[in-house]
Image (cartoon, rainbow, N blue to C red; front, side, top):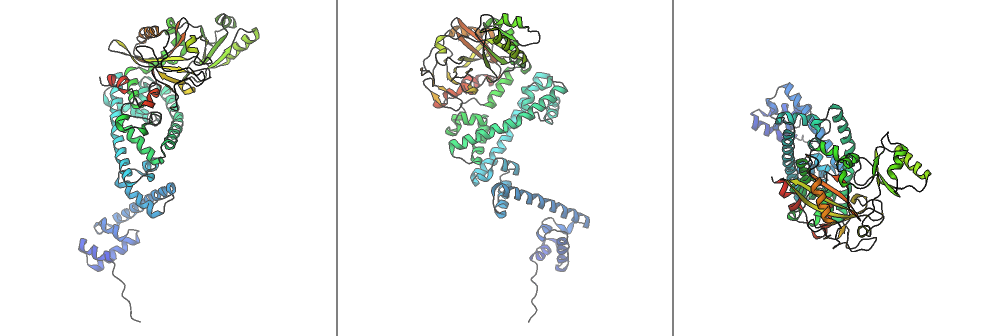
Length: 520
């Protein structure tokens, strides 16, 4: 049998061409590199013949680490997709070509996308990075304005807070520069606890969008990202305003979270707003001339006799936490039926966390007719701007059987013409369902005239300048037989409830609520 010559390594010839080495020398160098774990191809690419033995060893270690990292990335893609290794490896090349990190690829479910959509995702992520920088510049500028610091000092303070998990946005929203170290630490803990809730909320809206559209998870993430870059929407905005049915131009007609955050930051001082509006007792004391119901708080000085004197003549009361949000924690109690009942109510009230007890409001009969079980209220949002009280929007909120009419507690809302006080749309709930008649009472909703409308406008004009530094406020009114009773003010005035009654006709309120005020 003839001796078969071993085929020549093709890389030997290539190495000879690029290095000038003789074949025997080139062959030995490639074999030595292979012994270190460096492939022939990588040896030539990194010009290994120019390296010392120590440098060659370092290159081998570097290539080993790169391979381990790449293998881990391939495995991560395989675990997320169930793909074979070759397909996962090809995906990594596509990710790199589109400038998408593996983290973002997996987070956004990029593996659901076509090549064209993956390219869109890469461009969308790049645009999102630019938008974040624009927002950061706005936040830094705001901090400089509020504190008198220069940009470097502001950025240093914000970065220090960011290391604790407090974003630039949260830093500005909470006036973090006014907090001491202990308060900053408490804020960081609260932010960390809230992150899980935010993640759950995001996932909930992604599921809803997928159900409404039939899109994959990745397609949903891509479309929300595009809309966020375009107009600053959140996942909730995208779903409740049905952006999946709208063109980019139509999406831009809506007020979104990104826009309204800027409105809140620009027109409201957080610390002042928290002092006067978050505490219901402080609010009642500040705006007492517009509050006509009896009220008291359960501080340690409240005796039983004082309690009895306060509820004298009442048949029902409402109890709610001093830091109430979105109608949560409100309870209705009967009173003055017996001594035992009053004593039990007093003891239960005093055992609660800081709370306020208020006279249960007797509504105007025309307002109560929609849902007698709840206090149906009027929300009207004002902005004190250039010396005038501007009315941004108004909605009539009705309950559906519960104690409160709050939108997030199952209520419905319809838009009101701020000039006439007349309801001009069907009502809508948080899911987007619309009602031309009330689902419980059957009363027609559009065309209803809010009683005492001129008095509502008058109170707003008087109240909107009372707290300096807080100019954007959503006022809640109860309508009574004798006039109006101011219930509370909300410096975080909702842009969602303002627009949801108009979603069915595709009408956003950006041109009314935002554009005239953020442009200046």
